[in-house]
Length: 599
Picture 1: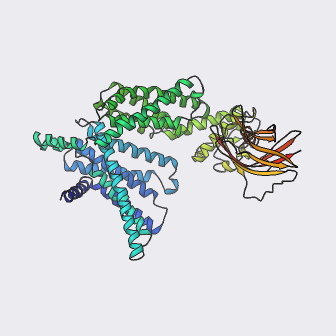
Picture 2 (picture 1 turned 180 degrees about the vertical axis):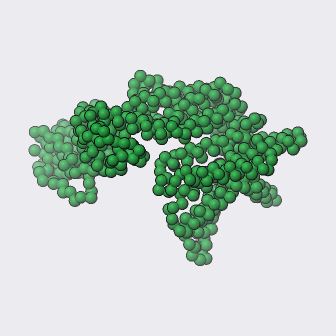
Picture 3 (picture 1 turned 60 degrees about the horizontal axis):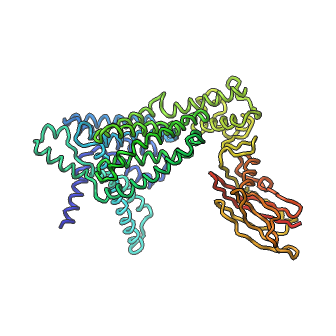
């Protein structure tokens, strides 16, 4: 009986969500219908409609929350719906045709959806007893419950379809796709919205008695309460793990504060992820009063500020060398947000955490508005850097680029990177001195500028790697003979993560020899020894791989000659022919043939 009542309650919740968000449901039905058409017709010309409907979904739920929080008249709700439709149509005509729907529009659409998501959680808390932390927790719970129900439903329907197909009659393979579409596009979003609490609205404040408002607030408190499982998970697993990772980051900062930290941005993605984790955990922990949660709220915002501030300064310094791209723009913008969030968490009481949402929305909106948006700023920055570098090396005459291979290595890297960025983002037609070449510049790079593009940061002058990364392999599309003439033995090796190479014994003219790995100056060497374990000849594998990387510059496909390194003395000769080379951040991997000649 209790199970039946629960099912009835969930069903009523879905009906209530449909009534509460009618325009949203219309957009969801449109998305499901569009996907169904795509499944049947298999057409690609639907992106413009799909993303417009998705934006319409988010606009409509925000409009409904605006109505509930600030308005009470029916005509006001209709006006908000009409405004939502107009904005959706405006978006549709702004994004252009599907062929124009490039990376810039994808990113901007993602930012718009992100802004609307934050607004969806924040608007109900404006001038309300419900805090942003509680609204965030409510959405967090709804998301995970929805994911759980969706996965179970997916699995159940899949099993039913398989059973029917195997036991009763053949089922069209598109039936699975249609069922997934209906669940993912229609059921799951409505189910999620059914878990959105019915906060005290403006209409409630004017029509309900104080007793009924109090009763509704009590129901809301129950809806936004922290489940015991989530409380244990946050307090005794997530917070301790975050604390351990924070200690590791602090140790790194202290060890490298005067070293390469300021110009090495390998940690950017990790620190952004760390900042997001701390902010998310803080908002969840704001609803918990365990000792670990209270301690987390007191300490971690103050730790977050210097960590993010240092990395943001590092990213800004890096701009001086590489210019500003839209990716680094958002990294810096997020750094500013994380620092501001840390200060808000440190200074203001918990109930004021809604200011974090305000800051996040404002910064996100700024990143969309020309001329300070991410893509305009990055285009101007990369264009100026390229123009300055070309003029500095007398490679720009009017709107024509003059080929010049005799320029400094760092300038070659700047030219290569900026041209690649501007052409890949389809900005070349907007730049006077690149417009004559347009996209052909990518394929005629060496002909236009006088040298091959350099992206890997290999310093060919000092024969060292400024960035420890390289990848190349033999050209297997061509039949290349590898001669074994003049050598006594040949063996194929795989060398991964600087692991030891197993020793192999062999005989040549009655004498025993061994080939294997040995360590010298913390480097792995390939060592040839005689029967008395005396070293005859050795090859430093890491140095050999770096030698190949240096001599082949930016090539990723090698000939046999380019992949070959020979080392010899009066007693023996060893030749290595690399099948593949791959190293990054001191992790060296390769596959190669080794030829040995005992003299």
